[in-house]
Image (tube, rainbow over all chains, first blue to last red; front, side, top):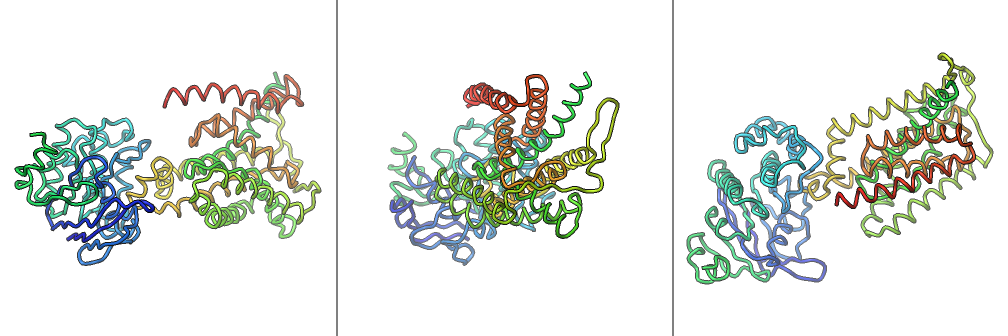
Length: 235
Length: 287
C-alpha cells in the first residue's frame, strides 16, 4: 500500500532523515519508534506533504506522492491525526467532525462515518454539541481520530497519540486503531515514543535513531531485541 | 431627557458603522493575523463607488449596494492574492505594515487624482425626509442605513456560523495547522476573507454616502475607530466587535452632548487606552 524508499528530508539545509525506508500493507499496523528528535515527526511531515523531501520515493498504491501537495496526498487517502491534535477548539465536536469530510465522497458518507465514530467513541455523541476546547485531553484525542476517520482514510497516521494522556485512554485509542486495520483493512502508521504500548498494537516496527532506521522487524522480534529492551523498554 | 434619547439614537446609528468596520477588520485579523491598515480607505473607496454609480449611472445608493460589495470583494481578493500572500510568506510584520499602510496612501491619493479633494454629496428625493418618533427626529436615510447595517451584520454572523465556507474561515483562524490537516485550502480562504473584509468596508462606505460628505480622507476616522472596536471587542471576536462598535458610537455622541463635541475624539481615545490597559491584564492572565 505505502512504500517509502530511501527518503531524505529535513528543514532548509539541515538534513534530518537519511535513507529511511519502510512499507505498510493493507490492514497492517506499523509502529515508527524513536525518542525525541529522532526524526519521527519529519517522517510524518514528509509523507503528508507538509514538507518537501530532498530525495527518495513515497509510493502509495503504486502512485508516486513524493513532493506532491498536502491536499493531493490527502485526496489519495493518507490522513493524519496530528501531534497535539490540532482541533478547532472554539467549534463544537460535531463541527470539527464535519470539517473532516474534505472530499465529496466523505461528505456523501458523512452520516455513516459519523455513526461509526460514535460507535468507537460513544463519549463523542454525548459531547457532540460542546466546544472541543472544553473536552478532556483524552476526549480531544478521540475527536482528532474521529475527524480523520470521517475523511475515509486508506492509510491513517497517528502521530504521538499517547502524548499527555492517561494510559487507559491511550489503550482505548490503540484498540480502535488496531480494529480499524483488522476489520476495515486500513493501513495504520503509529508514531510513538511509548514503545511498550506501540509494540503491543503494531504488527511491524521500525526504530529510528538520528534520522536513520536502525532496526526493523515484527513487533515480537523487536520486543525481545536487546537494543530495544535496553534503550526503550528499560529492561 | 429628550436630548439624551436623541443622542442615544444618533450614537446607535453611527455605532452600527463602527461595528461593521470592526467586524471586517476582525475577520481579516482572525484568519491572517494581520492588521489591515487600509480598512478606512476601503470604506472611502466604497463611498466613491456608490457616488459613481449614482452620479453617472443613476443607480440609487441602496440599490447599488450589492454592486459595491461585489466590486470591493473582487478588488480585495485580488489585492490579497497578488500582494498580501507573498508578504505573508516573508513572515515580516513590517512588510505587511508597509503594504497595507501604503495601499491606504495609494487609495487616498488615487481618489484625490480622480475626484479632486472637493467634498461631494449624494442628494436623493428622500434625502431630506425626516422621521419623528415621539420627541426623536431622525433622517429616514439614517434609519434605512442602520437597518441595512444590522441585516449585513446578522448575515455575516450567519455566514460564519452556518455555511461551509464560513466554517472553514473559522477553522483557519482557530488552528491553521488543523486546517491544513483536513485539507482546507488556506490561500483560498485568505482571499475570500480579505475580499469579505473589503466588501464589508465598502458596504459601510456606501451606506454612509447619503448623510456624510464624500472626500478622499473620509475613511481615516472610520479606520481608526475600527481598530479601537477590534481591540475593545476582542481580537477575532465578531459579536465582541458588534457590541464594541455600538458602545463606541454611543460613547461618542454622549460625550459630545455632555462634555462637548471638541473633546469627543480625546475622550474616545482616552477610554481606549484605559480599556487597553485593563484588557492587557486580562489577556496576560488568561495566557
